[in-house]
Amino acid sequence: MDNQFQSSKPIYLQIADQIFYRLVRKELLPGDKLPSVREMAIQTKVNPNTIQRTYSEMERLGIVETRRGQGTFIAEKAEIVDELKDKLTREVLEGFVKQMKELGLTKEEMLEGIKTFTEGG
Image 1 (cartoon, rainbow, N blue to C red):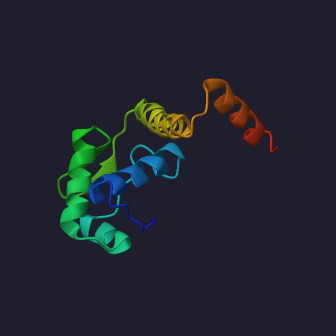
Image 2: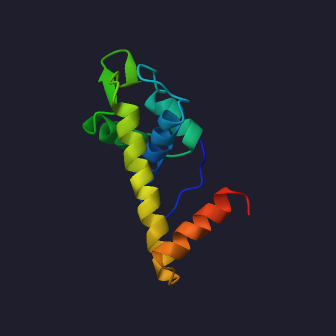
Image 3: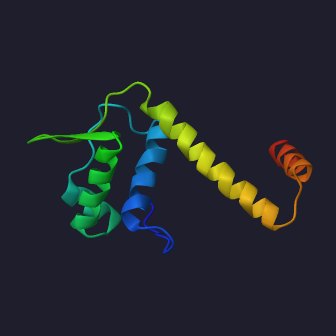
């Protein structure tokens, strides 16, 4: 996992986002077991309390479920990946559009820029 954290967002949410991206990219699948709190803390080089908070937040959102004595697992809900993909796409697009507007670009200029960029031009 990428260990470069931004100061503008709590670390536990950044770790959750990393897990969400892995889920959307199908690197993690519903039913997969996540590393233990201790293992994830070592991997990410953060305090175990931060990982516990990450897992608790993801459980609150219905992304993971904790099974006593077994660990934390990606929830086995078919719609979970689609919901996450929609949420992450919306967040990325909102940030992109906001930055482009700050640069003074019009909708047409943004769309033309996207077209040019995606066509390799």
